[in-house]
Length: 174
Image (cartoon, rainbow, N blue to C red; front, side):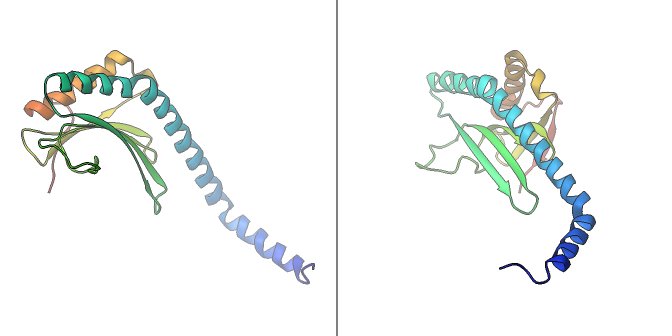
């Protein structure tokens, strides 16, 4: 059944699109840029970051340390922000089976923030529980395996020895 007032409905929708069209176009552009950033991050994560952290995990386990790698994705509905995390956890005690790897456990995380289109390296101290350090990693596409390993090594120094070498932002957590 056709709408009797179809012309008026079209006028109403045209007015709405005219008023919000720029905002909707901006949202679409932001969403496309964020999705592209996350695709690029996933490629670097698949080819460089995960293999590095998995090799490091095997090295740590060979030394008798409990370590594991986990992937975490979070989504904030209010801001449409997606965070992809690759986490190397070095629990002080053995975690319970199925424990949440995003909990405040010592270790390090490589975090891709879709809203800021920024990758951070976050390390949580074994030596001082509740302290963490964050590094912004610039130019994701230019990260070579050697640069990633250098970043991870620097973060691991903080995790194990609380030695930040003056880099990053020291954070005291509640």
